[in-house]
Amino acid sequence: MTSPYLFDVLIIGSGAAGLSAALQLPASTSIAVLSKGSLQEGSTRFAQGGIAAVLDNNDSIDAHISDTLNAGAGLCHKDTVRFTVERGKSSIDWLINQGVDFTRESDSERDFHLTREGGHSHRRIIHSADATGKAVSNSLVDQAQARKNLSLFEHRMAVNLIREPNLRSGRYRCTGAYIFNAETEEVEVFQARFVILATGGASKVYLYTSNPDGASGDGIAMAWRAGCRVTNMEFNQFHPTCLFHPQAKSFLITEALRGEGAKLLLPDGNRFMEKFDERGELAPRDIVARAIDHEMKRLGCDCLFLDISHKPREFITTHFPTVYQQCLAFGIDITTTAIPVVPAAHYTCGGIQTDLNGCTDLENLYAIGETSFTGLHGANRMASNSLLECFVFAEAAAIHIAGKMDSVDLPGKVRAWDESRVTDSDEDVVISHNWDELRRFMWDYVGIVRTDKRLQRARTRIGLLQKEIHEYYANYRISPDLLELRNLATVAALIITSALSRRESRGLHYTLDYPHAADLAKDTVLTP
Image (cartoon, rainbow, N blue to C red; front, side, top):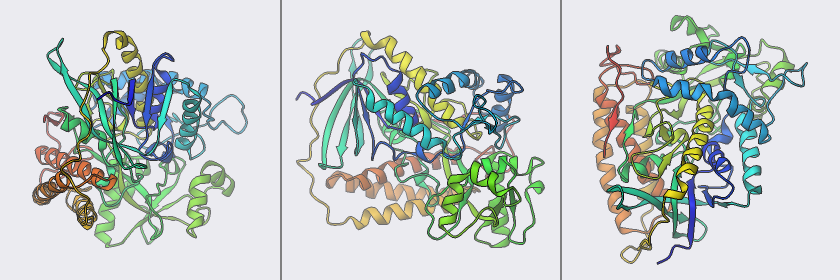
């Protein structure tokens, strides 16, 4: 059959990375951008803090590089760090040209307000109040909707990548993907010369997370099934401060509060961070999250507290309007009261292995943003480097694709999706039960503090779950819940395997069995 959807470039994901790549490809390129939900439902929209870049005369490229390397605990790739940091200012300039309205100093129409976050030695976080992701997302969506060469598809979820032999190179190349249309409940075929995965991270593999529901590791799982290596999946960043409230779902309390002087407190009102790190509340996220986890378990309490009420009311409501309004909706006035907080899974530091152009092991398949592993973050992502990575590698991939466009043929014919041997399920309870079990044992056994015994228990359980999920997938028509469960199980298995193979504690991977770092820092590379 001839595919009803044929493009030069297929981009799976409509967040900061995906839309930035689409907007930086040549206007002569036909591009499809697929969004799992609506265009603005991804993780980008929920980013509060900002974007790290050297924009102040008192700061320097070398300082930003040094801070990133320190936070990464010996596993950052130095060439990637320099490549990314050196392109920070140009990325910000590009965003400003796209219409992103960054916050300026109160007494200036020209100078942008910069804040400081954990691990940074200078103020270098440019932001739009405390809703930077929302501002970026709105601007990029507006720009994308105005481009005639972009076709935007909502409520589309990728099932599997399509690959075919490349007779010239003797390797496989990616030529598209099978896509589930949630509105028609049909599987469509999208074909393209190039495919970009910009599907975000996998933090929904954990019971408690700051991420939206769609962060189910789809791109990582699909790339793994297609033969791509994944790297450093054991490094899952837990944000230290998510709002603890029975009615609050995944609401992040931005690290910028601590950057502006907020203090972490025990239930009795005493500070504790100085016992764990001389930088106190401004220590890197892995240290802060582990300290909070330790104190909660030591005291047997459900949460700790983050207090910025010593700052002037106007300062708080001006700099943190989103946090102020959201907490107020739950009866917490942060200008007078400390905020109850707990750690939650936040960012996937590992992912699909790529080079500096975003190229993966599969020809013509690119991965950018949180779904990728570039080597920037090492064993622990430094605050606000993630959005910067999205923009830098979106541009790099766009430039690389544009340079290859004329040399890549259109894909050949591909088989339609075959549903002739499956039936409708009457046991969806299997999906909901397995989803709940998976996320609970990942939280309990593969969380902030790990042991070999816990990891081995998790490995046994994920093996059983994957067998059940495979049988279910083979016999019943697919649904978004089933696809996400299948991908989460794949990602969970990769995380567990990676964690078991790292016999040391480094960055975000902390195990009681091996509490010290090894002399030699090595990436954990898994090959299908």
